[in-house]
Length: 448
Image (spheres, rainbow, N blue to C red):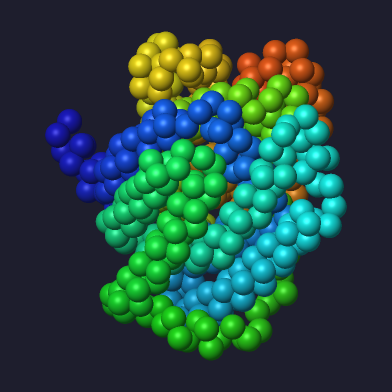
């Protein structure tokens, strides 16, 4: 038994996952502290307005069909595995160019719509602060290029399997975000203060990780990453047009998946008001803390799966993937079961004004479990290039879920919004599993 445990814990994947999990533990504590402090310090209506701002910002980002982040999770590990320094430079220069062009166009377009059209009243006809909500969403778009650069620099470390550094970066990132958010509402407990705090956070973290990347880019003995100046100079380098198609498919997949949580909050705010939107947003925030169990595994899978497929090692991948899936099911089931039982104590942490969030959390534990299990299939179907089938399943899910969810929200308010989230994931996750898992099993059996 001891020998078997020793073999398990000596595996690179397991050690990397444990390292990331320790880092995620620190992130969870810091994030939880911030997520409790902000709604406690703000009025229900102001927090609800902030939820509408952030989800509107999220919906606007769905226009980003470049697929930069999913593409980086695939292309950078592939280039590292092939020891192709030219591919690294070309992708990172392409990433920078595309991020800057998209971000500038996105901000300009939303600002123009806000100033020249009745966008605010069309979105929120019954809210007095509709203009302010859209205006704050415009300001938040300014952080987008900084966040995109932070992500790609972080991926450069995970693609080299430097998971201790990734864990440190993630912990520091969450610490700065929580400090900026709590500090902002301590000064002014209004949504505009949170906007200022998040802009400061994005600028700080992007600057820090860029400096760290530059100082550590030569640390891997097998490959050297390009310098910041090389990336800037390479911004005009040509890049395969096929990458645009790959990026578009990945972006469309990612953006459609975000609709599963963004739309219910927006529809709830429009139909049931700011307070109901705040209750649903807070409940989602609480349940998302369960990402602690899956995030480190997912981060590791994003690097491991493309490398395994690149080697054609499907037999071992099939074996390890089933183990990961089983472990996640057990861990997530335990966490969300405990969260369901402890939900009545939420007002002790967040304040009595949020007591109506309790049943929403208890409903959304199903969303948490489904999202955890469904999330690990993402790296698999991307590397298999099953994007068309996945996109079709997402469109079918939204076509069924949106009208049903709208009816639920009109009938039950924030509770209907929670039911809508669960409905969307309950429809979609089984479809993804049935599409992806049999293909991996077939390829593994072919190697027996």
